Image (cartoon, rainbow, N blue to C red; front, side):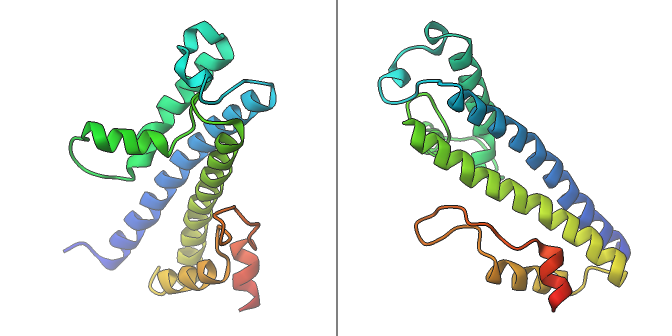
Length: 169
């Protein structure tokens, strides 16, 4: 059996890998937001026109959407049906969605990516301070329960940074 320290270290490393992936996702999302701010037209009509005929910005936006699509699977194993892929695609940014919807999706994914990064930093700090991660999940749950990512309408809300929260406890 692996030692308790090895298991804890592997969990911290897994969280760090997830945070690294989140940073890449944030960069892609930030670029998609830049393209929208630059005036890229999206919506039901734009979504029916092949991106290659809409110009370089539309092509880049499509490429970003395609790159982000696997992340919507959230670790689902195995093959994906066409129906499942359609569901994942509907949860992703796209030329076929109104600009306001694309912005909402970007804001939500950015909040989730930031939370992933916060968790990895929290877990690494917790292990450093306590020498172990026993109790870390309960402490993190306390933080997330008091600092939800989204309001009742599903809009991202500013949250207190986790270290400030833990310092006050």
